[in-house]
Picture 1 (cartoon, rainbow, N blue to C red):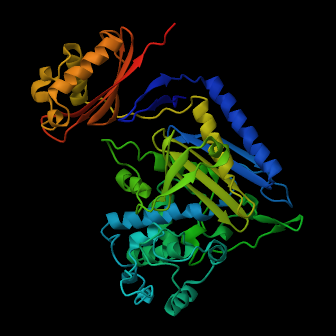
Picture 2: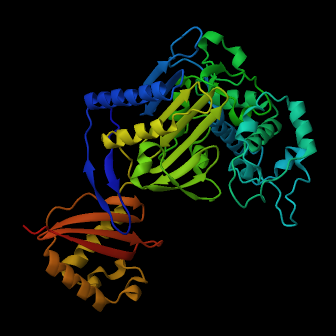
Picture 3: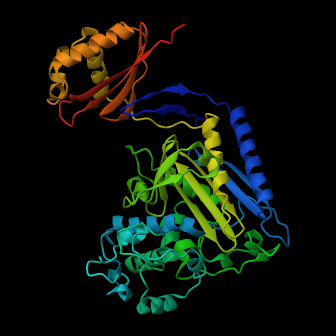
Amino acid sequence: MNWHRTALAVALCCPAMPAVAQTTEAALQSQFEAIDRQFEAFQRDTPVPGLVYGIVAEGRLVHVRGIGVQDLAEKRPVTADTLFRIASMTKAFTALSILSLRDAGKLSLDDFAEKYVPEMRGWKYPTTDSPHIRIRDLLSHVAGFVTDDPWGDRQTPMPEAEFAKLLRAGVPFSRVPETEHEYSNFGYALLGRIVAKASGMPYRTYVERTILAPLGMGSSGFEVSEWPIARRAIGYRFEDGAWREEPTMRDGAFGPMGGLQVSANDYGKWIAFLLSAWPPRDGPDTGPVKRATVRELAQGLNFVRATPRMGGAAKDGCTQAAAYGKGLRVSQDCQLGLMLHHGGGYPGYGSHMLLLPGAGVGIFVFTNRTYTGAAGTAWDAMFALDKAGALQFAEPPATPELVAAQQTARAIYAAGDVSVAGSALAMNFLMDRSAEGWRGDLAALRAQLGACTGKVEPLFPSGALSVAFRWHCDKGLLDGTVLLAPTRPATIQALRFRPKPAAKP
């Protein structure tokens, strides 16, 4: 296995240098066993009748474990082939279906939803400047509908004719569209109706043909009765000290918001497909939907909130910037960078998925207890993999322009004068800090650190036009960053040095 992490965080203000960790197969197996124990404790202590969780890396399901039973009557054990309803994790399939129809020219994300759902004509919040609802508003939950988890979940089997009747009657708004995020199952039911209208086939048929079948997800689908009960995890809730079986809901108009049923083996293929969209690259685009389109799931409408991490990592004070993309929640973590995640709560089921696109690793979990998704345990597992050194984040390559920029920075330091850079400096450079000021700064640095003729660490790009570096000097380390201007040829618009003197004995 080869998914180790180079622990590196590069910021233009203050770069942190890497410590490469090599993790052996034995160490990884030990880590999997430790994560197994975490999920075993969750299943036992929560409790839930059964669960299955999986870890995806290197484009495949590298670890999967079933714990407990899929039904309390027959006591069948949960396996990687047991079928679970994944609730709101269905929304990413709906969102990607909309995007694929956009790619095919069947719709635009800026189309008004009423173009495909005529019953919505005339829907407006009661202000004169309330906008019409766009398809992209539905994707990111900014259409102004009320949060409807308890109600929406029970609407899964609603017949299409009854849904049309509900739409004709109109719905109340919670807020003005496009002003704030508010999660709406109803909105994703509308997206399912748009998929059907734009594609000319039932929603479930479009998802099965466009996504499930091409990915080899042959055990997945929306009508649970099409699979034998011996394969299904039966859904339960715990009420008044006893387990009660939840009713099995058939597929219907609200299926697009949460009705998909999958196995762990199938879902691992979906997670691997999503992760394969990163990093952007040349080469064949062989998936059922383009890589660039998959990456759009991480793009929302910028209604960002500060949220804590989930699980035990919430205690460390790292606050994430989080928003809703398209069928996925998007967070920027202070340690792990971009994180894509979503939970699923449903009568009889709970689920969670967490992706680190930069590392190509994903974790998911399904349970058969109402609204019990083991999200905290999934996040704890991911942070445990990071702590064990098992995550390797892809870094941008050092372009020739960045290599040349570091050489210019070394020449400047060695000469103690920025004038040696000549035309390599952008027109703003000496307007922002005079040549005389630079000479004084460089003289002070050289007095503090001496010559920097020792080891030069590998460059750490944060993009094609920005880079962090570290040099070993006579009396300490010198960290720095270069930011290039958007010109051809490339020129330096900003250069920063940060000394790290050697510790005194």
